Length: 140
Image 1: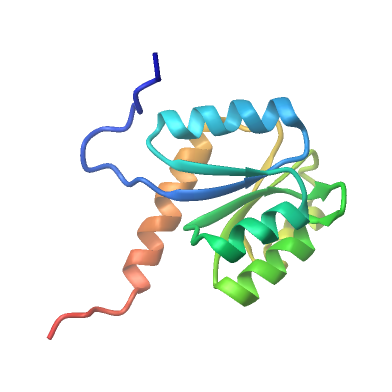
Image 2 (image 1 turned 180 degrees about the vertical axis):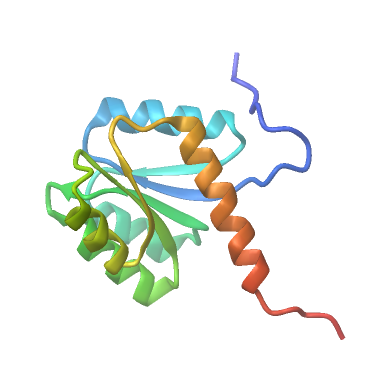
């Protein structure tokens, strides 16, 4: 039986590109994000992420920084430049220089593994609220 999303009615549902080369981590995080009502596409490399972004629009990318065919920094710069997408970096380091480099690459936030799904959900909701606050009004 499919698992029902745990998000309440009216709660924001996002389209997410989750980039992680560790299969078990990717599957678990995607499952947890889907339970919160988000649509999640998994990619396990920079190339897969770029292919997915070329054919589908995502609200955010959540990416590991260490990928088998490049860095999450390079991936984020490219996705941000081409598609104006924002993202959240995931890494095994909480070193201040690593965090600064992630932010300079275009990531809006940096999380150190292991990831707390509740903190990640809160960050996504905050980023979405910030995006809405700066979006131009289309009122007549």
